[in-house]
Image (cartoon, rainbow, N blue to C red; front, top):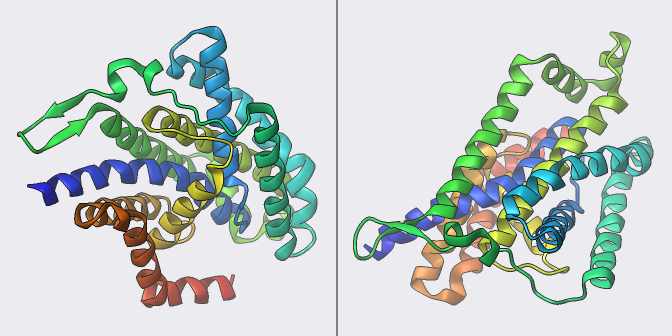
Amino acid sequence: MNWINAIVQGLLLGGLYALFACGLSLMFGVMRVINLAHGDLAVLGAFLVWAIASHAHISPFLALAAALPVMLAVGYALHRTVLARSLRSGELTPLLTTFGLAMVIQNALLQVFSPDVRSLGTSAGSLSTGSWKLTSQLSVPYLGLLILAVAVVVLGGLQLTLQRTGFGREMRATAQDPDTAALVGIPAASVYARATAIAVAIATLAGAFLAIRSTFDASSGPTQLIFAFEAVVIGGLGSLWGTLVGGIVLGVAQTLGATIDPQYSILAGHLVFLVILAGPRGRFVATRRAHA
């Protein structure tokens, strides 16, 4: 039963990893950019939700509703002011730009909020602690189920947007060939800016759930970036549903590793990532990037 419980908890943890990875996958799929500031942007969103909830004395979910439009605007402005120029300077420049942005965000958060650890768990009430007890050894936490459901809805909604809407067709056309898309009147800069805004908003959603589920601080970004990157690679770069699968695989690997020994939790996830990267999937990703 312990193994079954570990798999169930891993499935739910995978929903959180999929949310973190979704924005990263979207930006790579549309712009071919690996955003090294993605984790720190998620933590920035978590701090914004925490600040609103703490100062206004409201539920973190209401605070999240107020923070999402702000982070949408931040993502849009971020592309217009920083990323747009770097995209015109080759493949390496955006990588260095987002790395520098990550350092700026992380140090700014340290200056403003200090290195203290924070959490929104108590503000969420019974949602963060309650669970459905199926057996004496198996329980399903409310929050974990909510996060997984939100991840499915977000990824499904984004997939439908890409397939069924005009904006989605513009994103797909720009991702395949921005120069040809521009010839038929699709403004690549505007598409990229909106894609970045959506990615940052989803990262904020993931950061808020992280703040409710556990603790976070100004230095939490790089760890979340690693988990998001591993989920994206496991599921397939640029694949949204693959991102969900990758997050679940990573989450299950970690919880199964923790069942063997708590010290093996993170290591087990890294090992699964390494095995997949060294196998046929990793060679396929490398080939696809080389021909992109």
